[in-house]
Length: 112
Figure 1 (tube, helix red, strand yellow):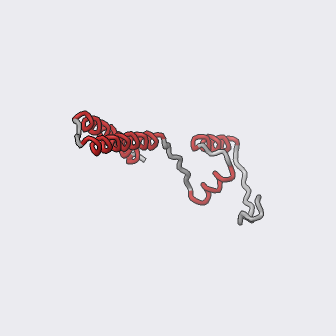
Figure 2: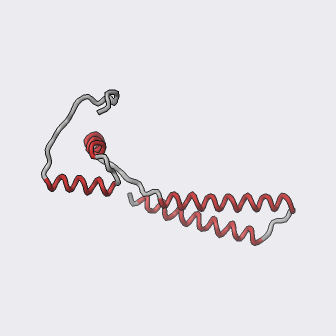
Figure 3: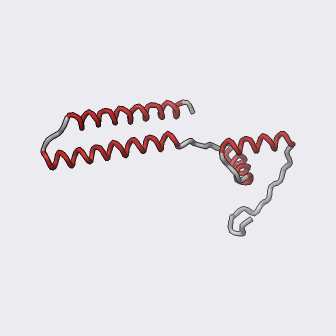
């Protein structure tokens, strides 16, 4: 234990082999490798949550694509003075994908 961690009171307890296996299984599900940190978190807060960020990463990717498209269209409009139907249709399609992803993500969050 680090001397400056503020944790000076040791706590010890025993578990059965089945309980130990269950603890390890739950730690693996959460992607936690530090048993002390996991047990401390569970003892203090009573829960640990692991959030799958892959949907958020996909959403951020769609946002980048949309903003890049919008910037390219804005540059073209500023240089030519014309707004092309293809550009508007592309933006509408991308924003449709974006809102579909947002709806899916919100549905998943609602089920938590």
